[in-house]
Structures are given as structure tokens and as C-alpha cells.
Length: 179
Image (cartoon, rainbow, N blue to C red; front, side, top):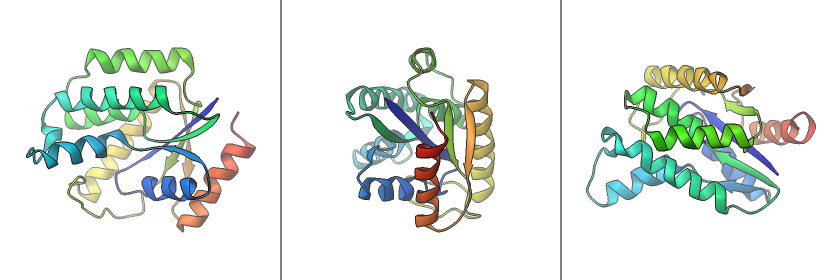
């Protein structure tokens, strides 16, 4: 089974690339943090990321989605390593559940070791779930790269460009160079 992670700074275009891959028939797994934020905001919590329990909720959803997604080739909009980077960025403690999940995915080799690192576009468009400045997104991007490398992953950059070009780069890399 091949599980590819797409990651990068908020607003870099990961989700747009995921949508493009899905349109082309690929199996994709949604970003858990965005769904947790939307659910919590819908129930009256305007900034759920301020609660340290937010990190464990994301971890639980990521694990559940990873374990139930069928298919031999899958594309993930973020992973538990991203959740670790998010906790670090937010200065939240790393929950034991996240530590255990990371150890599981590293030990089992759940995801490909080459992570498709979607490079920032030079700006961030704020949304209800994305309240981060461009400068903060660059710091978040740096933390992501460091966190992935600390767990033995290789960050393969996907340069800024048009959506079709970036999606084609992802397809080319996952078909031609990644095991």
C-alpha cells in the first residue's frame, strides 16, 4: 500500500491539489484539523485550537481515517506528524495519544518516507479556520519541515505554480520516483 502525505504551510494549496487528485480518480483523505475546527465552530467554540485537547481530537480523527481508507494508493492532506508540528507551533503539550500514533506510523511504515511538501504561494488568504498571517505561516512551514525530518522523513518540494502543474508534479513524483 502506498500512502502519500501532502503537507506545507497553511494556504499553500494542499487542499486544492488534493481536490484535483480526487477529480482525477485518486483516493484522498481530508485534513482532520480543518474538519475538527469546523465542527467545533458550528457548536459555538470560535477558536478550538486554543484548547490543548484540540490536538488529541485531531490525532484520533487522523488515525480513524487512516485505518478505514481503502485502496492501494492514497493521498493524505496532512498526517499525525503535521499534528505534532501544529502542537509545537501552538505551544501545546504533545499528548501521549499523538506520541503513540507517531510511533505506530513510523514503526509500521504507514506512510511513504518521501513527503510531498507543498511550498507556500507567497501569501495566505484568511478563512474562518485559517487565522494566520503570512509571516506566521512561514514559521509554521519551518516547524513542519523540522518535525518531518526529525522522524526520518524526506521533504520533497512541490514548487509554486498553477494547480494543474502542481498536481502533475505530485503524480509524476508518486509514479516515477517514490517507492
